Image 1 (cartoon, helix red, strand yellow):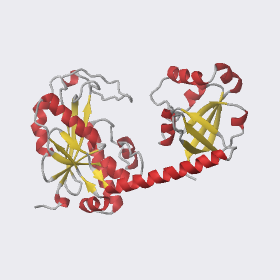
Image 2 (cartoon, rainbow, N blue to C red; image 1 turned 180 degrees about the vertical axis):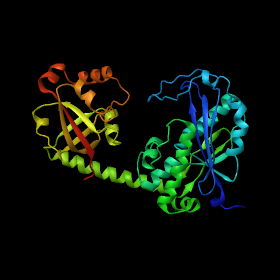
Image 3 (cartoon, rainbow, N blue to C red; image 1 turned 90 degrees about the vertical axis):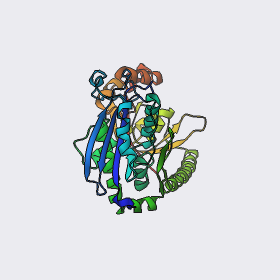
Image 4 (cartoon, helix red, strand yellow; image 1 turned 135 degrees about the horizontal axis):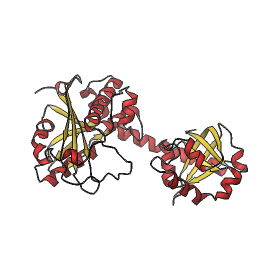
Length: 347
């Protein structure tokens, strides 16, 4: 039997077109490589999803393809066996980024097409990256492309996403200085398994240990920050759970408020404690890295990055509705708006 390091790598990615129809797969990307990550083929299987396109996802995605473009393409049932020749090859290591999503879609597509489900083992590059870099929220493939200097990349194009997952695994192995089989042993990886129309997720013992240590660290910080708040004098800001979570994962890095006497005293380097509005309040300590002033929320919205203020997918009207539900336009007019640029702190 051939050793693991002689096997091939197969990276896969699926794209679905209708959030209301499970298994509405219209694109399957596959990139096959040899044991040295030399690409054998890069392929996108375009599929007629046999349903309308409903693209109202939480984050709008431009797939650059329409239902009419796929009218003459084969159905999932018609490509299933060809896909299986690669997925079920026992000498191939199958991978996907955030693999559970793709495995779920594979199973749902098989159910919908009334075809035999796939049987194979797989790994998740998102989990491997999280274990190698000790990060809580993983990394998106668009950020992988930037980190690896891969310019010719289109996010949510299935073959490009597959290729980036392959490169990410290669990068992680290089970071560890290990072969694949050595990394599996070091990280305690148990591949996930597709069988009988269901699947079990990949497990990673090292990631479990890191998460446990991170949880202990977070608990210790909560106790420390709560004590600091009880001592008095700290600047606190209450935020809704959604915005708190965006701050915590560093997606939101700017807090907008109307200016008042207390906020006017805040300087660069000062801490701000954010308190999550929930049944069990959670504290997040940040440090001010820059301060900007604007005459209105409208001008702040125009000047600042929308994701950084927590409104990535919102238009001006929705943004202003939210701001004016918190602050009156009179306060905005008389006080002005202050933007605190923030960074998380763990001291």
